[in-house]
Image (cartoon, rainbow over all chains, first blue to last red):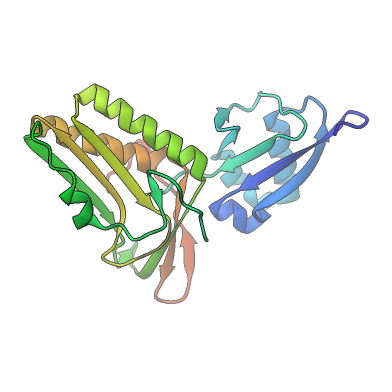
Length: 86
Length: 149
């Protein structure tokens, strides 16, 4: 719900980032916030995540995003560290 | 981790390589290439006991399907298949299997290598190594330009 231009988004992290942040966290961000502002906020919360977040891909609704894309209220943002399958 | 699996390309069951091979023969295909990526007992000088894989399953399923479709079109394959195990993978066990079938071997080999490279580099799957000394480490991931193993 958007109140006073503040909205909530859910962030899901994986692998080494999950060890730092936990599986899911909820963030309060300003309305019309972009992906870059969210990753900056996460790095502020856990500075040790900086390198990993910088090399991660981000996705909402199974679509990859760029840093300037805008996030909507209630969106679930996936932060995907570099793949290491196989 | 535990993943509820109702999927085609991601499995938390042990990959039964022989069973897969039994069903893959195809009278149009003069070549069937099978790649099995396996857990090995060492990495960077340390003894490894086992591996564990984590996945973002919705994206992984979608991306593997796209990779298989791309390869099938590009190399005119008769069939392309990939399955990746998640959760614990023991030594001498398949973590990922890729099978390509084609009229001729050149295309079957090339397509198989393309598929495994794409899966390793791009699909959101992550490997954690459990070393014999009790330590663990998430794999740093592949670099597109330097990856060769």
